[in-house]
Image (cartoon, rainbow, N blue to C red; front, top):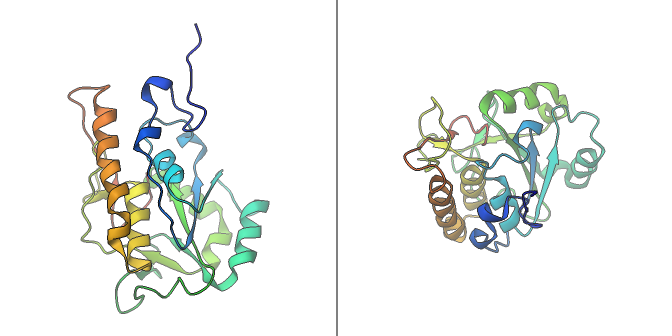
Length: 211
């Protein structure tokens, strides 16, 4: 007998997370570039994030230089599109370099990379088009609550956490994303219920490779 999948979250019915999704009317459009190996990963937080945000696009691949949809997005948002990635030139959200509210006047967009740090780095290195837009990073003192994937990085964050923290700072309204972050905690608990005794974490706040 074949396994039945939820038509919305694309997970096995017994592991469906639709009940954890919550409607969030985010102001900047969110684009997530997902590494192919993360598609269908039950530990991944992207389905919960994408299913909760009102304005979000998920693109799958490694090299996005010739990706037509990403090209269209870059053209549409022009000078108001940002990559959340801790490059040497990245401006820290909430700091004197980049203060809350700078990116939400008119249409705006923020791009995240979804994968392990190594996979996200590969996407970044292959996708030279991402080197041409401004980079943002999160404050280094954020604490992650990602329990289901292990990492050697301190203060690990998942894609969902990194996105929520970034949007909260950009919109100057972190309270707006608190409910989704609480649903993320429940997501961890739900996943761990299938594997009692297991725990882990995500990636670092300073290295938002996102997953």
